[in-house]
Image 1 (cartoon, one colour):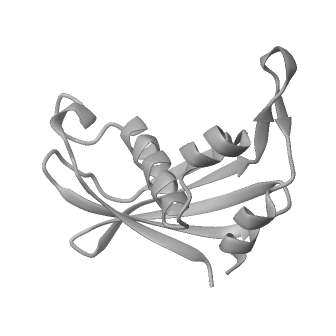
Image 2 (cartoon, rainbow, N blue to C red; image 1 turned 180 degrees about the vertical axis):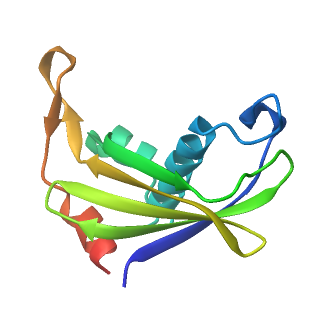
Image 3 (cartoon, rainbow, N blue to C red; image 1 turned 120 degrees about the vertical axis):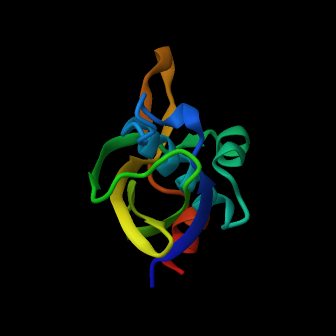
Length: 136
């Protein structure tokens, strides 16, 4: 079973366009926040991984599909699932609902990386502790 977390969000006016409809980049900010919450549910946040072990998980691919408009002051839920865990990467899928109805879906593919010389990202093997938690 995929590791899952649920993040509740109340849509702010600043996340919408002039008509009060959520501007699409807001979804990607929510997906990122929800992925951070997924990691935090393991007992170890992404910030902790970075500060203590030097690992980060930058996005290398992402996408979304929008099924219904979402508006300022709507209360939504982002359910995030780690659906594919590989030796150096992780795919997280997101389902956004409002009052139980699916309004959007999205995904992120992230790689495990360390900051190398000259600011270069070096792709790394996923730490055992991280991989074991995601694999359940």
